Length: 207
Image (tube, rainbow, N blue to C red):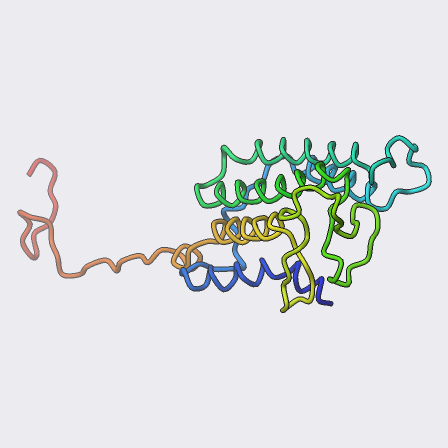
């Protein structure tokens, strides 16, 4: 439950920030993402890496599926690049933050042989892609060592930057409140006549 709340926290943060800025959280009119199929392929490769099904060749299982992780990083970077140019400035900033957090995690994983080390006293369980932090690991400040008491879990610097990017992207994609309700159309003034025309005067061609 705590993990689910942590994953949903950027959505809650974006809704609160968006509402405070006069935006409508449920109308993401500015979210026009390209190459969504590429994003699904990236997610599928990540699932294969973490689940390590029986049909997966042994070379792709080595080092916690590091080769598959490299494929995920490459595909995700291409997806981010494809979506930068058409995005609005705020959405673009969110994408850049997301990619930065994503790559900070990637650097930590690559530097530690394909696994993300986590603090030993965190209570987390080791598995594919996750190992307890030890003296032989590199870049410990990029690993899962930051405690988030509200969610009873540890995260990395990259996780926090990634979530800040998701929040920024969602806020930037929200419609402004006046846009969502429709622009105010001023009432047509009454009692105003065109210059040169008097009351009771009728239009005649040639006049």
